[in-house]
Length: 245
Image (cartoon, rainbow, N blue to C red; front, side, top):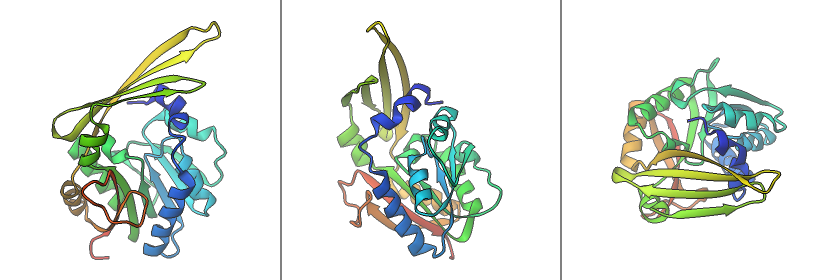
C-alpha cells in the first residue's frame, strides 16, 4: 500500500517515538560489530526521522522505502547526507555493498508474506559487506495476542482525529484499520481510511529465514534496551551477521 494519508500524519501519530535514543542505540551496535562503519541503509525508512538522526551521528545514509508518499514527507525535511530511494524491501537494489542495514519500527511485521520477507533478507545479505551488520526489530506474537489484540486507539490531534482499530486474526496476523477525520475551513470533517496487515513472526521463523539468506542472529534485545528478551517482550531487536564472519 502507499500509506498516502497515513504518511501525512505519521510523524504526529508517532511523536512518542524517541528517535535520537534509538539512533544512539543502533549506532553503538553498528560500531561494536563493524568498527569504522560509515555507509548505512535505513530499510523501510518511512518519513526518514531515524535516517536523519543517524546522519547527524556521522553516517552516510541511504534511506529506502516502497511508499512514494512516505519518502515525499521525508524529503521535505532537512536531509544533509541522506540519499532517498523508492524501492520495496524485497527489491532492494544498491550501487554497491554497505557497512550496515537497519530496519525499525516493526517494518518486518508489515511484510506478511514469508516468501517476500525471505527475498528481503536475501537482498540485505547480497548488499551487506562480509563483515557488515544487519539490525532489525520485530513485534512479537505476545504483543499481537495480548497488547494489540482487538483494541481500539483514538488520537485527538489538532490537525487530525484518528481512530486506530486492530483485529486479531489466526496465525498472529493483525488487521489494522485507520480512519482519519480531517477538519476543513468550514468546521466540517473529511473522512479517509487506510488499512494494512501486520504479522508476528516467531524467533524460529526469523532465524530460519536469516539462515537461508546466509545470515545468523548474534545478539538480541528487549526493545531498545540492554535487557534480554523475555516471554512478555513486545518488541525484539535482532543483530545479525553473515554466517562465517
